[in-house]
Length: 440
Image 1: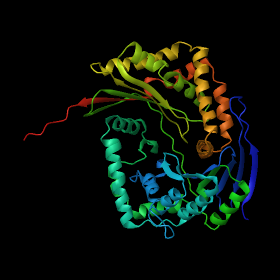
Image 2 (image 1 turned 180 degrees about the vertical axis):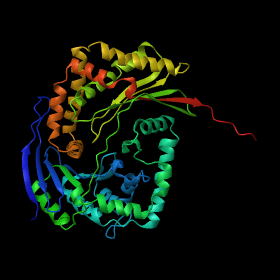
Image 3 (image 1 turned 135 degrees about the vertical axis):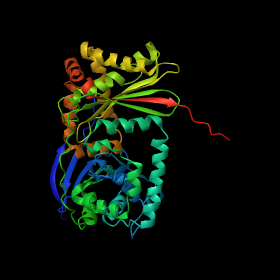
Image 4 (image 1 turned 135 degrees about the horizontal axis):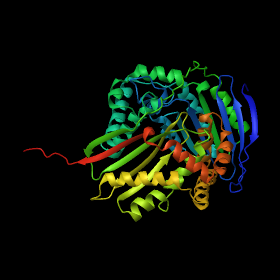
């Protein structure tokens, strides 16, 4: 067995609400493949996940959507297992499988009863280096993705506005691109583009396996070593730093599109985890939009009755700084300018008035509760470790929870003042237009 056992650690999640801290075993093969195994024997199920450090931020200029299209092609077969055979094998054995692509990484996973999990090892090793990429299948699947884009983004006015705001907010950083890709870029992607990207990024030294469940780490590692050891190491990827220049003034986007109601989306540049302010921003997000009892919904929907919905969104789990969003849909007959003023008023309130200890405690409890729920599912548990590993190291989980617990009301006010300002903001307004009637 060629793999090197690097370290075995007990992950101690010190806050008392988290039951049964997991044992994480970490290994590395000679070809650079990293493996994390979490034995969890509560139920006879297991998940096997392969994480590639390849997302839309890695795509060459003019080829946006490449990562996501390759994700589709990964189900189109190898010489050993033809088109869609992998999914049929999984289903025949009572399992489920899928994949998803993000700006920073792409994940493939199966969920089986634990006595079938070894099937994943063979299937994932095979498609890591034997993908066929048949030219006809490439063209066919490209059409599928283009139709997906039409239905999910171009025909959806709010998602269209989201794409426009993100593209405007970033001047140079590849986060400006949608993961699904721009339509004009998708049309230009051919088999050679996919093949070159696959060879560069889908290699053992750019991947991490995360397995969790009712499994024996020793038995699983023997199988992983037998199947993955012979896959050659890929080229060393030289990633250049993608730094976005500081924004120097508000940007405004107006989208006129067929829609039912006006909609507003505001985006502020903010840091990502593990920046020291990311913890306060996470708490701030829950304080604004952690449910219908929190600030935005209470103010805009219940009290002022000017919006049908109002919320916020922040995820600090990006490799580079991203955006903090606030958004709302105007109620019928209400002016979107009043909705915007109300959103800004809530921000100013956060910048000038200290939130109560109760609000902060509630938000922090919500964050910690999501970790507790994650412990109950081997799938979510593995996803959590994989995501933190993509950020640099799975042990950052400890850092994150410790940071959240330390957030104070003063930290929240400080973060609101630092990032929620006009110079740092991109505002998008959706103005509904009526569908033009064709003359007969």
